[in-house]
Length: 294
Image (tube, rainbow, N blue to C red):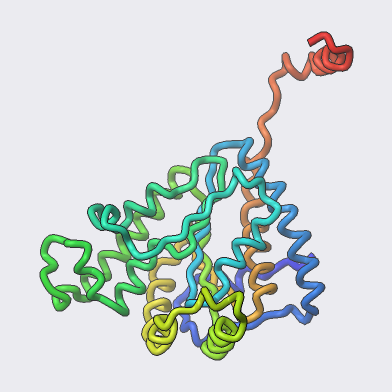
């Protein structure tokens, strides 16, 4: 089984995204990578059962990436062996009128996983320091006191948001939420190919929007703000992992391997033990059932 070198992907120091690889295959064929993924996700699925029974931690997985980076398919493949009731996926779109009447973290807070469960955020609270930085006019819809025009949104505003997000995640961690943040690092050329496939394959046409091309023109701005957000908010309690995303199967395997390796280090996560009284009478209970006495 492939054991991903987590240190290669975890963000522990300030580093440019351009210095991080977008492709990985571990020198293995697509079939071998797929087989490794199946084995690893099966073990992760078994861990989820234990996490649920233990009931003291929740796991929050945050996925970010440029359009077509593979977030949807990664969720489908990584969690395929989970008990469906043990994982909740939330995809965050443009804020609704109700969401805009609250602070920007509210809709994320109410979607957090309960103890014993995995929660996956497909796009996350980081949209509030990413897409809004590329399009600062979106901030105006939040109706924030003191912000009357786009020119009021200065660097201090963004510095404060980074601080708020770090504090938000610290609060979650202190109350038993294990946080993993994955940036699916896609190359611009690979995105071009994937967007083209959306146009060439009829069954994928529905995924395409002309807005995809307009946002692609802003690639450099997005990379700049992703880089800053990742470097400023990767903390021990809520680390970022930059995952090479040009090879979808390898990216899924890396994410699954990181989750399994990191989560199994929590030795206190184990199935609750039966009371001495129940253990002492297991054979008796078994006999009652076998003989149809109950």
